[in-house]
Image (cartoon, rainbow, N blue to C red; front, side, top):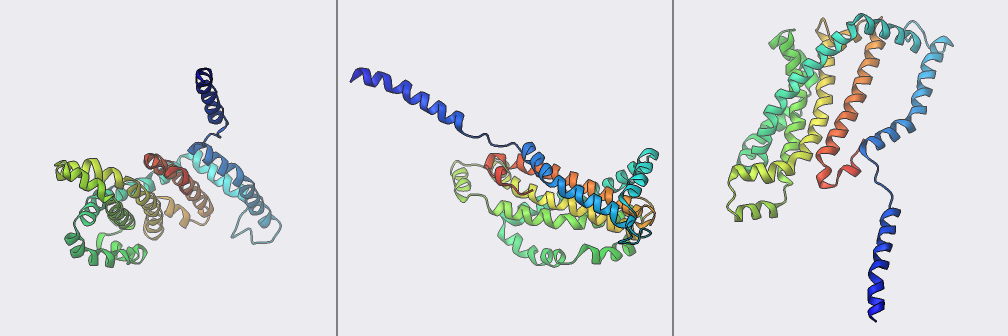
Length: 281
């Protein structure tokens, strides 16, 4: 019996090692993104070929929808001259300022509304009223009140992002496990320590998800504002017929890059909860 007892532990440990080696490795976020791009590349190439062939074959009017090669030529000229970088920088700066102002406003307000029910009841009706008013419907109002300068464009980006951040912050605060709060309270934790060590870490994934929506909405809103009243930016670029498709293509590329960057940030923020593996693209 002693011989059997002595031989079993090495046998079991070797079996465990084999099983661990046999388990497939979980793909990284970079690997998943690369796989998604690789699998979707043929469809993108097919669309690009159709874009090039359709105007040249006379299927659509090349005057209003030029071939992709001509669009890329215009885009390259703007890159070489530095005009494209200037327009992109101006649009991103406007969107970034509006988004940062939305973060400074929405996150603290969301914590207050999510934590204190009386404050939420007092402010919820106003928030819901403003949230259900489209930023595009208010764009002319912003221009009339704030003028056609930078203030109106920053205001529209702020308005577009603030409610995504606010609602997601409220949801994140309310989804904190009550047992964690009770356990922290039982140990005499102050309100500030409770916020810093329990509520805020638990709400981060929801806040990041709201930021992901808010960033893209801010960018698209500033493009709309630039199309209506601006002398610079990607929206202004799209308004010019000879550069319209170059501007649209630029916006598409920026949107894709932002999407993948925000997905990577969301996965990183939610990694500790184990939800990053099933995060949407």
